[in-house]
Structures are given as C-alpha cells and as structure tokens.
Image (cartoon, rainbow, N blue to C red):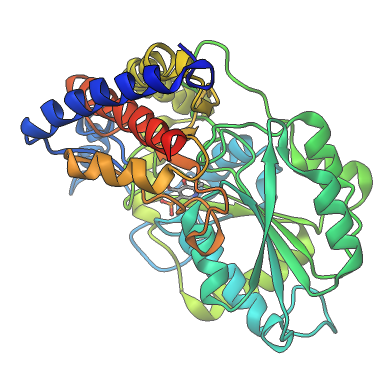
Length: 425
Ligand code: PLP
C-alpha cells in the first residue's frame, strides 16, 4: 500500500514489521558490495583470450609493417582507429588512441587547457579566476572530481529523461564566458542510464557559448553497452556539429575498460582538426607513444566493430539477469509504497534510485550496518552534495546473482524503513 495513504497506525505497524526484517538481515552478518561499477570475474573471463593472443613468436607488425614493440605512432596504430571511430560516431582521422584510461585523457585535456586555451588568443583557463563548469547531475563522481581538483566552480544542471536540462545549459553558456565546459555521458548515463534524445544532441551541436573556448566533454563510456533487446540509439554529436559548423565544440572520449579489462584496456578520444592540433602538440611532449602492443592485442581479438558487438552480447547475457534482479525488487518491494522512483535503463552499468527526499544518507547507512556497501549518498552530485539527499546509485555488475538478490532485499527494506521513519518524524 502507498505510504502516503496509510494512517498513522498502519505506518507504525509497517515500521515494526520492517524493523524486524532489518534486524533479521543484520543477524546474517552479510558482506555484499553494490558500490562500484566493476565487471564481475565472469565478465573478465570472456576477454581472457586477449592475454595470450600474442606470444613471444608473434608478428607484432601493423598492416603497414610498423613494429608495435617499438617507439612511434604517438596517436595509435591505424587499424584500431576505425573501431573507435564507429564507437564514437566520428571519422577515423579524428581519433587519437591513448593509454589504458579515458578518464586519464579527460584529466589530461582539462589540465592542458588550464595552461593553454584550445583557442588561439584566449586566456588559459588557469587565468580565468572564476572559471566554471556545468555538471549534469546525477552524474559521474570522478568527472566532478577532476573539475573540483582544477578549481572550477561546478554548476549543477538537472537531468531530465532526455538528458541535461538544455534550456538551462543554453541560457548559462550564452551569458557567461567563464563557463568553459560541460561533462556529458550521452549514452546510458552514469548513473541513471539515460540516453540523450536526438533533440538534446542537436541542441548541443547548436550551442552558442559566450566563451569561444567552451568545450563539451562527451564521455561516451557506455556507447556499446546495451543490456536489453531494446537498445537506445544515440545520434552522432560530431555529425550534428558538422551540420551547424561547430565541430570545435565536442571532445569525445571512450575506452574498452568495460569491454575487455578495466585498467588494462585501450582508451581513445576524438576531436576536430583544430582541437586535435592543440591536444597532439601537448602529447608530443608528454609521451613518445602509448602501449601499441595492447592496441594490437585488441585488434587481433576483435578484428572490427562487429567483433566488439558480438563480444558485448556476451556481456549483455551476464549483465541482463543482474539488472532484472534489481528492477524486480524495486518494482515488487518498493514500487507499491510510492517512496522511490528510478529509471529502467537499456544499458550501461547502473540503476539510479531516487529514494524519499532526505533519506538517501540514512538508506546507505542502514545498508552498511546490514553488510551491504553502496556508493556514498551524494556522490553523484558536484561536491558530493545532493541537495535533496535522494539519489542512490546501484551497481549490479560485480555481485553474484545470489548476492544481488540478498543485497536488493536489504536495500528495499532500508529504503522503506528510512521512509516510514521520515514520515513519522
Ligand atoms: N567514464 C564514465 C562515465 C565511467 O562510468 C567510467 C568508469 O566507471 C569511466 C569513464 C572510466 O573510464 P576509464 O576506465 O576508461 O578511465
């Protein structure tokens, strides 16, 4: 029954029933983790062949005869570029392949613009004392961490079911030239699993920022990460920018972290010629070349984008039952009470739940005391501050199915218990 329709007596009964359930779970001394978006061992195992795809007698040459074991090819081996180009929906010549982490490339890019603006004649961002960055939230805590580290004031942009609130984005960037960028996870956003609508992408491609060096940090981390048979479609930001003549706006990132091995995958970024010139000018001093042997392993493993897609189907078959468990518990246990809302994502790595306002921290605490670790409440907002204390990110990939069932039972009891206590306050 919906809690808002319950009498005080009914609520008190519900409270004691929930407290009893909660104490029973606590007595089980469980140790479950739904905190970070890490692939499970089963998922890592499907990529294991990549470890012995090259042996000491393998030919490590590219098609053009370049020996990947040696220095050179600073922007990556040519063969891997078409794969990333199709993942990020750009031309292969816009790609720079990097090291093992896209987050690292994002950090590097902001760091670069701190000392050298992407636009000739503009002040480096370090000299813009009141520099600001737009942060659609809930969002990815590590994005916010980068801009906090570099001293940006972070402005929260609310997320809608179609992506960031574009009315707000358009207005703010048109008015204030100290706003230098925006973080975006356009497909299966972390944590809500929202894919930006065609209209949102088109509005991004048509932005009129006052700052000439405003850039869209388009983190396409989940571009091929469908978990259902009805995947979302994201249109190409770069294609839209070509139509509006604003190809300088986006800088696009992705990696194979959640395709092969996080921390040992391959990352890439894409940008138009002008941005790429500034970016490569810096990398030229930063490194002689990245890990081309790992790039070669990935090429031999996947061959082409169809190989990536077939591989992602294997991830899907492991992940889908986990997402199903999370959604089943939310629907059956929390749904009827009306105390939380959530999106049902078609992909990505998370389910974001908005519990009753003012109870997220309590829910996380209750779960912790019962042995279930969740991402800290507030982590999905700039400065770790969720003004409504409502959003909680659930990461279902790592636990086993049995662990997830238990963890979700506890999460649901904690969500309802915190809500009932709040109502009765
Ligand atoms: N971007 C998003 C949106 C993520 O969720 C993650 C990892 O959770 C990353 C980037 C990290 O990517 P990488 O391993 O390539 O640094």
